[in-house]
Image (cartoon, rainbow, N blue to C red; front, side, top):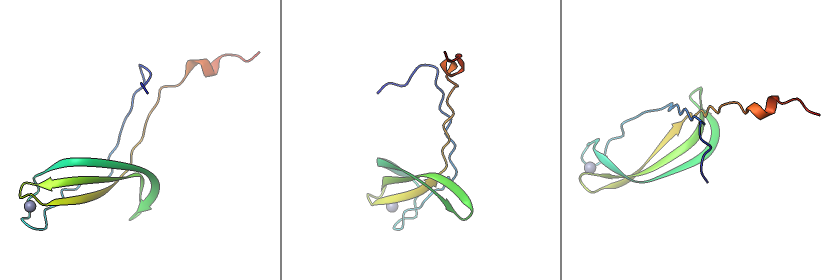
Amino acid sequence: MARPKGSKNVETVLEVSKPRCPDCQSTEAIVLNTTVQEYAGESDGKPFTHIVRRRMQCECGRVRIDRSLEFRTIQEQPDPSRDAPAG
Ligand SMILES: [Zn+2]
């Protein structure tokens, strides 16, 4: 489904962490797969809207799953047709 032109998405990432490989302690890894689950909650007093799981492969070959809680806001432009007088 295509997004309507002019809509603007602003994503705010609450938590940015650099997980390390438990084997070699490297932070260099490539993302194999990303799963985003819409789930609103709170962690340590900080609200989040999504749970993001990333399958990462370290440069040493180890595959791990990093889970991060992200607060994403989507700002949409107001729909001008909503202000049209009814009737
Ligand atoms: Zn590693």
